[in-house]
Image 1 (cartoon, one colour):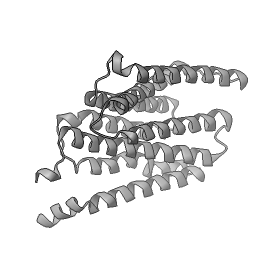
Image 2 (cartoon, one colour; image 1 turned 90 degrees about the horizontal axis):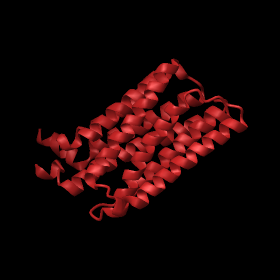
Image 3 (cartoon, rainbow, N blue to C red; image 1 turned 120 degrees about the vertical axis):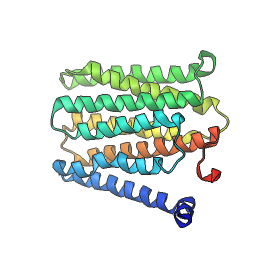
Image 4 (cartoon, rainbow, N blue to C red; image 1 turned 180 degrees about the horizontal axis):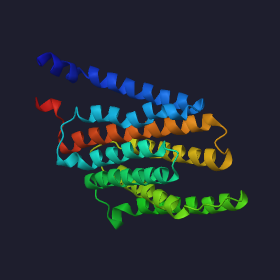
Length: 245
């Protein structure tokens, strides 16, 4: 038992899990590039369970429930979006939206948003959402696209905006921890979604390398947001488990 604890303290097991995570992510990109879509059942839905292994090495309490909820919602989203059923795909998009909300609440619990201190973050988030809505309309008009599920797409974008607002707010106002990892994660998430939209509406899924970059970007976002949140909570709230042994 002592040897196991010593291994965990050194972080060896955690580094092995992280390596497995990114290897699985590269396998997911490989399947996308060569259009092995049926094989993605072995790659995409297994990414979040691997991150769960890292999560369960931390001290777990009720304060972690929103992180856990975001991870579960993302896991369901990964499983549903690889289906050929449009209903499942839209349900998966909804799960991703729920994960954004869950992570946003967790950031909010670390640093509450007030109009005085958070107005810059709110302004940036709303401006980004408005620009996205106008670009979506322009793109649909110029390419003669009929966006039958536009309200659902905007709801998804709104959930991402809420997460971005929480991230910008805590980065600007919290002095106890460096939240640049969260800003990086949000930027990568936006890039992942823009690439996915370009692949779907502009390239019509013919350029698989775009899908690969989008998938890798999203996987990197998930890693950064989960690992970063856990470290931030350990630092701010003093719940680091191994230092208590």
